Image 1 (spheres, helix red, strand yellow):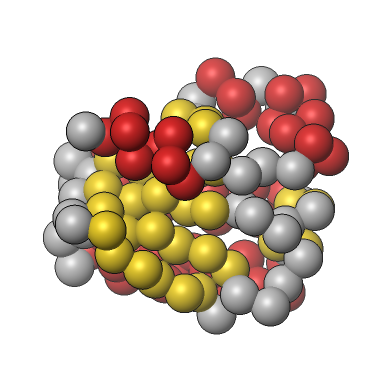
Image 2: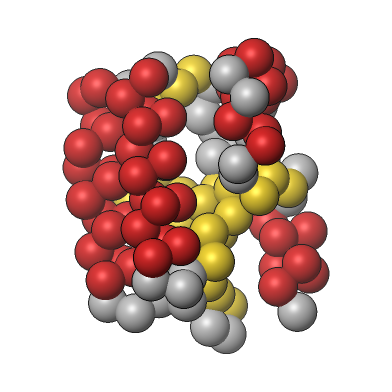
Length: 112
């Protein structure tokens, strides 16, 4: 479901072969992200490149992951958000709780 690439101690996560982050994949994505955090990942970048829609279960998975990351002293950032998804994030005021960047490179720079 997820691809994980590492750059030094940073896990860069991407949902493969999906354009929508919805009910159909949200639980599996959340499970894999939580597993990564519980295995002591300390820095995670969630790359949403290619995702054009997120429903409430997708957002719930992201919020749950952010909460777990905070509990475990793990940094969780998201990037490459499409304009349509960003509109939803802004309308729901989630832009005030997530650390959002326009690219993976910007996320990495923020962690240095």
